[in-house]
Amino acid sequence: MAVRRIRAEEWRALRALRLRALADAPDAFLMTLADVELDPDEVWQEWAERAATSERTAVFVDDDFTGMAGGHVGEGDDSDAVLFGMWVAPERRGSGLAEALVETVVGWARTRGVERVVLNVVDSNTPAIRLYERCGFRDTGVRGRMRDATNRQYALALTRPG
Image (cartoon, rainbow, N blue to C red; front, side, top):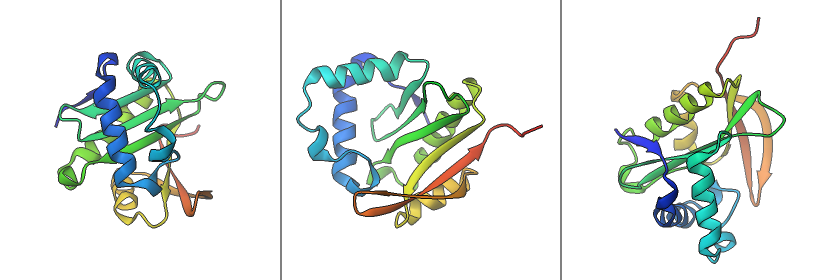
């Protein structure tokens, strides 16, 4: 299954994929479709450029643009990478694409030397929780809220202390 980093010139496809994800799973993301659907082309171009070239942020897709996941290492705290924006189109769920996306983000995070990869998932999203647990992520016990849903934080340790 081919998963690769987005290229800057693919901003239109990235925009279409992101809007499709937000329409399909509105509770799974920090942003809503209404928040971003009217963003000008320049916003999408800048995001694609950053996602394609930055040392701290990357977005990965499959060649058919039916799945995406991002990774981000925050400024000033290089101990964690965040897996964000994970989504797979309904017609590709169960195909292994989700695992491939997660593994790609984790691999990218390893090259950044971080200690762990963290993510947030809505409590009611049982299929996503099962996916992350299959990929080795564990519930940290940290809870938060996003709009009307409770989220739980999961983490995958990349290095062992000591």
